[in-house]
Length: 452
Image 1 (cartoon, rainbow, N blue to C red):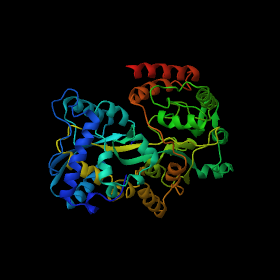
Image 2 (cartoon, one colour):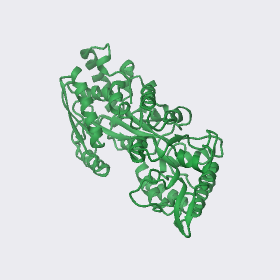
Image 3 (spheres, one colour):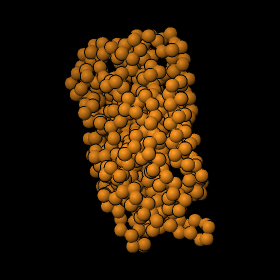
Image 4 (cartoon, rainbow, N blue to C red):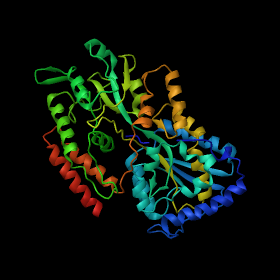
């Protein structure tokens, strides 16, 4: 996933710069102390909690596409119109693996940027490693400008550890079902309603399967098996992935095994493509190889471009599980500050602006990418999307699911280990892998990693 906010920034606040510096300096010292007890990061000699002057140069790291970088440059230019005394040096590393290698290396050397991008998956781990400071004291000092009540509750949960907020939001994403309306119309199959279930998903998909002998020409229902997405699917069917205190993986549960077994059976029948079943590098939905495809809110623009005028398409809400609920799992991007920043006041001024509704307009609403990290901006996003008269007509289902169906949970500090283990094990589903053994191995391997 490209993972992946906001209200008026400091420039719109009635607080004076001098008053802000006085308040923020104390709050930042408190924040750093809460994070690392006033000590340096492991392997560094740089003291934490350096408030700085509130002016000068700060380093800003992102992990985004070249097109998105142009929008970040616009935001920086807008920021400098009211904060001319803060210079922001932007470094974008579009390759995710290289970006996280740089963050890990810089953390050891005490050279993290003053402000940098973090997936919500990373927050608990980075707090545990003392890479980022808590922002709650700053938010409390600046409630009018930040207004965290406008953040999605589910994202607040993911950006928090022990009730302290460690990041401000950029975007927030979930998945829905993309449908080829032309294919449905040609087959005389009704578009599913909001009350449909995962059993309906596979049954409807079965109407579109086409084979020539042993060769599969078309599947019905494209599925994804991202771990964070499947967490929601499991929960909607009565299963959990982690313990309530996030100390261990508990994914090997009967309800989860049952769903994976059902998915494996549908792969065997050709209703759902098994891993690597469709041609490499080909979008199966845009190519007409599936009638439906589970995909993310971030994929609407690229789908619009890939489909063109080949067929009519839209998006509908995810199916419900056996519990009668959707339990949509979401994930996103955010902005954080390290304790090694030597100018945390300037960093906070910039982070606050990044998380403003003004910046959200430039970064998310205007380009219609993902879902804004602010509920108020999501309304702007939906209005712009509908006024464009481009597909999908029902694009508002993404923020609707965020409001009505999103699960407010966090990710454990051993998420990276779980993510790698999940990806390696789940790849065997549909290729002879037994769902019960897959989940048992994932749980055992993850808990061993968690203990380490």
